[in-house]
Amino acid sequence: MTDSKSQTRKLWLNTLMGSRIRISTPGSETDNRFTVIEYVEPGHSPPPIFTRHEFVEVFCVIDGTLTFQFQDATRFTLSAGESVTCPSFKPHSFWNETDTPVTALLICTPAGLDQFFVESDELLKNKSKDTDTASEASYQSAMKALRDKYGLEHVGTAPEQ
Image (tube, rainbow, N blue to C red; front, side, top):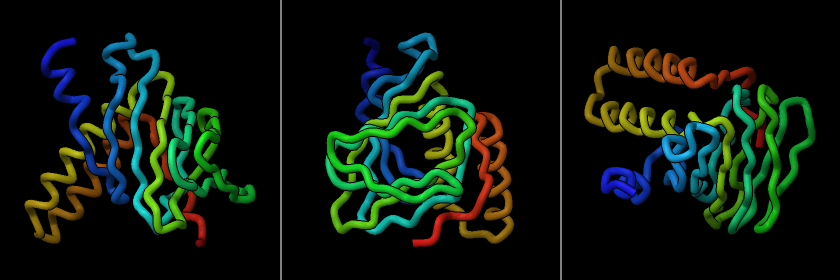
């Protein structure tokens, strides 16, 4: 393993919703067949907008309790040791209703979500440096372009808590 890959694995990246991720296995090491991402969802996190994507995603809860909902379905919870598979293009949302952070592994095939997180973390860093209103519109446009690039589509409002 090269030093740059080793460094990437040690980096924690931030998400728009306040979660933190670390890429355990980047797609570059699997010929982009899959990626493994360590995901930490803080306590009392808000549910994100229902999103669908082109890849299959498996959530494996390591610690804590994650609330999960497919669009137009009943929400359910996953505890440590439980998992759920999100088929491609099946809109879903997830969040943490408890005080305790949730740790989960995300396994995605094909890879791509790992690079989405790398690029979105960079956009977030640049956004935090600029408080100009015009910059917010530019940021939102850049995030939309990034979602389009990686096949992530917002298809409905966030579930009500």
